Length: 157
Image (tube, rainbow, N blue to C red):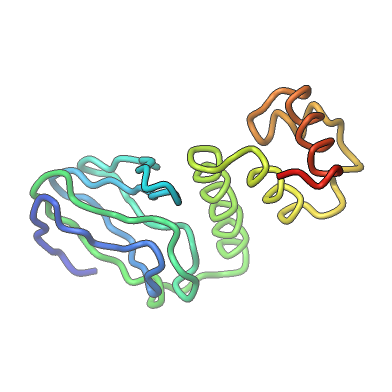
C-alpha cells in the first residue's frame, strides 16, 4: 500500500481505464461519478476521511467510473491485481459490480436502456416475475413498462 498526496481537481481514474486501484482516504475528499451520453454528470458516491472508494469492476475490466479529488487529499493506493482474491470474494465483487452498473443506469439511462439492461443481465427472468417487479427494478411505473413494451413490439424506440 502506497500513500499519495492528491491535489484538488486531480483525476485519479478515468472511465474506461484498466487496472483500476482502490483508494483509502486518509484526509480530504474524493468522489466517483459517471458522465452520460448527453454530458450530464452523475455522482455515484463521496469518500471522506476513513472511507474507501473504487470502481467495482475487476482490475482487467474497463472502469465505469471517474474518481477525482474534491479537496487536497492524502490517500493510500491499493493495487487490485496484487490482492489475493478467493472464490467467495470474487462472487462478492461480481455482485457489487452488477449493483454499481444498476445504480449508474438508474441515474443516467432512459427507461428503454434500463429495460434492455434488465433483459441482458437477467435473461429468462422477465417471464418468471410479475411485471410490477420489473417496473420497480428499472424505476418506472407498471403502466410505463406496459407502454414501453407495446412501443417496442410495434418497432418504436
